[in-house]
Amino acid sequence: MPTQVIVLNGGASAGKSGIVRCLQAILPDPWLATGVDRLIEAMPATMRSPESIDFAADGTVIVGPEFGQLQDAWMAGVAVTAGAGARVIIDDVFLGGAGSQQRWRAVLEGLDVVWVGVRCDAEVAAGREIARGDRVRGMAAAQAEMVHRGVVYDVEVDTTYTESIVCAQAIAARL
Image (cartoon, rainbow, N blue to C red):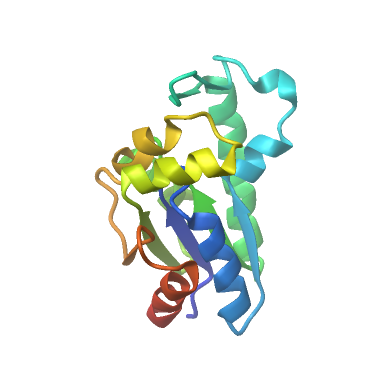
């Protein structure tokens, strides 16, 4: 069975979005791209609260039960989309480490999935975070290692000094 889903996990500003765009450009079949940032953007602004999801001044992400319920529904929808025949690349941040991966494993059961760890030195990611200007400062450094705790990957790439296209080629070679 050909791969149906690629899950990229890495901290904020690690370079996942760039890798996703490169994968879409180099893979022979069309792949849909989605991610937790798109889920958050799709939420009403009123859900930016400690009960749902909030971003502290130091970059800490506070996830509440309302967000968890919405995220569960979104994840199930992504899995149904892949099960219906679309190839999907997921750009995520496993704030819960291995627990986050387990949630994805449960909804993606029965699908061929490639798990990708996207690593980046915390200082380099923090510099990218500042340059982007659309993140709370401190998020990249806080997430750089935390999101990988206990997570098992098929492929790992490091964007600290490696371009997105080279990382995408390494992932594509694994497919």
